[in-house]
Every structure is written in structure tokens, then in C-alpha cells.
Image (cartoon, rainbow, N blue to C red; front, side, top):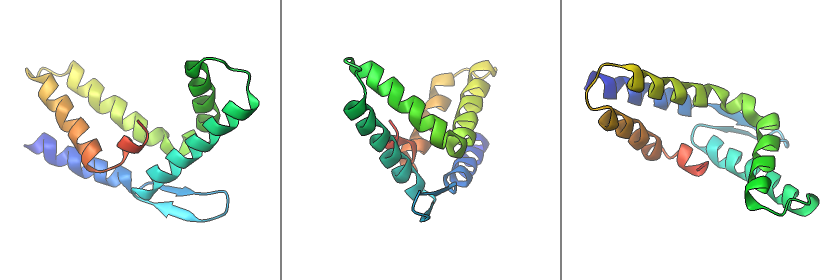
Length: 118
């Protein structure tokens, strides 16, 4: 139970990330992830129009590379946290690793954050 409470607290803190749009409008909390999704979508649309990539995977990879170059600094702490929590679960001595991994995923979907990026 302690794991779940700590996880929920940490994710809620991470969700309070902030972002600024090019027009100077500041977004906070869950709204950041909608902003990030729109930025990625804009990057994707630009790649589709200007690139000669004929494979969807190539377009997605190029779009994400452009997005990450411009906005990755605002999301890096979030993905570092996710990586480390899953690494902790994987390397720990707990028996039901899948259960704890599902708790993490449930918190992400429940907070309405990462679901926008997937």
C-alpha cells in the first residue's frame, strides 16, 4: 500500500509540470499534455507536407525527433521518472512485478496525462 501512495503522490507532482506555448500562453498540469500532443501533431503535419518520407514509421520517427528537439526538455523529467520506477520494479525482489507495473500504468491513465501522448 505504501508503494501505491508514494507512486500516486509522485505522479501527481509530475503532472504539475508547466509548459509555455509559442504565443506565450502558459499551460499547467494535465493541460500540458494536451499542449504537447498538439505540438507533436503539428510537427507530424509539417513532416507530412514537407518530407519525402513514404513510410509511416519514418514520418513518425522524424516527427518525434523534431518534437523532442524542441520540447523534450519539458518532458524529460517525466520520462526519467517512468524509466526509473519501472527499473526499480524490474530489479526489485518483489514477486508480482506485473501487479506493480499495472499500478503504475493505472496511475498514468487515471491522471489523464500520458494517455494523450500514446
